[in-house]
Image 1 (spheres, rainbow, N blue to C red):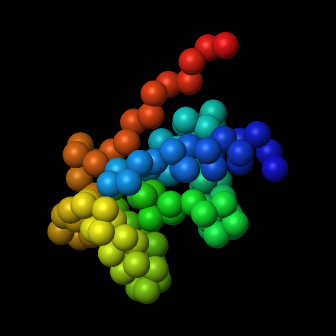
Image 2: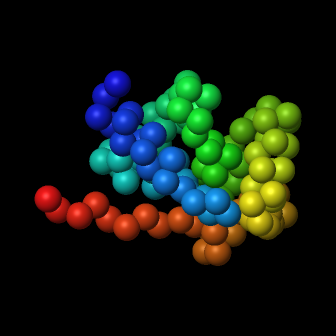
Length: 107
């Protein structure tokens, strides 16, 4: 596992219940601001193995990016069960629900 992948997993695992992060935000926190597509790949391939809260990850507009109806519905249901209110168009109000982790502390 690459250091970036390990860091992405750690960031996703740290998203608290009732909050969301964006793919790009996760990539930047993991050290690669342009790595949003890699975050998508990691989520797709490692969510089950690492029990990642995949449903707490949305695109930069706060939209649920999943295209498949069943997965999209599940993500909406999981977010709502955590108290996240969805706006029209199945969007999350990022001003209200965006998780902004503390920056890493220098060693």
